Image 1 (cartoon, one colour):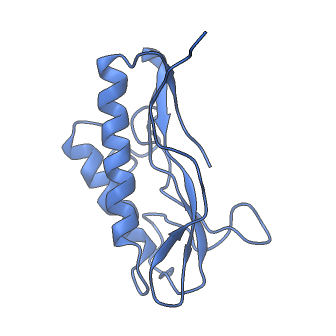
Image 2 (tube, one colour):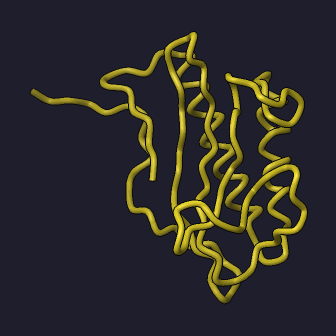
Length: 145
């Protein structure tokens, strides 16, 4: 589980990146159903981010800014295992019983920020995605004191 927070206030650029990452999270979660190739979910997220002007691994392999990694991976005996959500692999299709992450992110080290929203999810026997993470999605944390 990963969250990114701003304390007290989110600069407009950070808020825009967060909004994009949250939308990518929502769209990918909606797409994760039995029989869906994991590579197609990864491609959708890349195309979504590129449509907003962010570089991605789809058309800028090896990029060090923008969307620099795969969307997700399975969890089980290992922290990273199948099903993998890679552009290069069409062999993985989601199946009931899969436990995996969903973790879109945008990273701009030269601008001093990165955003990621990550949850662990379970694809149940009815083909519905259940979130196993219980943490709010708020970007801005207000400190009272």
